[in-house]
Image 1: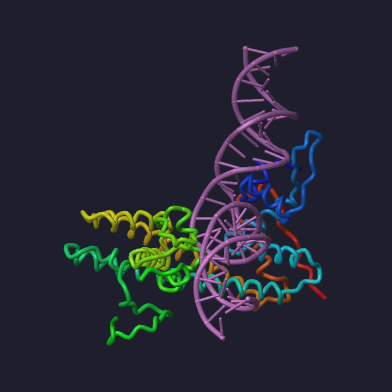
Image 2: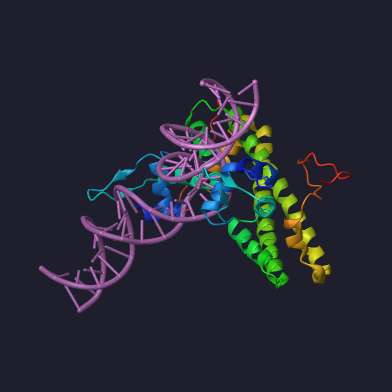
Length: 149
Length: 149
DNA sequence: CCTTGACCCTGTACCTACTACGGAGTTTAC
DNA sequence: GTAAACTCCGTAGTAGGTACAGGGTCAAGG
């Protein structure tokens, strides 16, 4: 019934050393030990580790997972809070998708330009090197194009 | 002409302490110093910092940027290698977009289910808890969903 | 019984890319 | 002249782990 850490790792999807790490940071309780000091895990322990593993697969932070575990343990279930955590995380994931998509578009752009104009100088390096002809979102230096220094 | 670190930070887009960090890890050379030991930067230094800042905005790792800087410094320009670094990074960014998109879809799914069936138990927690289609050796899954008060 | 190899233990260091101090010295503005 | 703003260095912290080193333990084979 009770198993060693390597078996718990295989069943839960958490790496062996990650399990010890989770224990160290208090995300899972310290398990029972054998006389020799070996950790032994029961099914409830493995369930908890699986919960964490799935949470990580969905991109939740360990802090978010900590909250979700507390909510999961609580008998008077508070679905609203779970919902809030999940929606907050979804928003964050979507934000990261947008950010990375912008990066990918920009990369695609400079790479494809480079393929066309390779002889005149690398446009990829040019995009990194260029001074001021920037139309990127957000930043504006107060430098008038009509009156250069 | 030469400026202090705070000005170099403002012009380059790198945080002041980040500049010192880049110096410490050897990404930028140690700048000249005043008699009192203050760092002073010239335009070439600021250009290099800007290069790094733009690289980071495109998501390149500092190691990749290190390579790109070397290629940029090299007079016999090797556009192929630059291209390889950029394409490799683009592939990685696209991989991350896909991964995050999968996460977002899954989150969307469990969140919307939860909104519909909130009374039967939280489906978000259920998705994390479920002992499922994976290799579950001979465990019975039948747990009657008892109605909450 | 003894050895061999596969486990397991603790503790620490390392990774990325920064950021945030603490405590001191320096420059600048009024 | 003095107070505020700036700079210095070094260290430690962040997330989420991974990777040893240097030991102890357990099962099987000979």
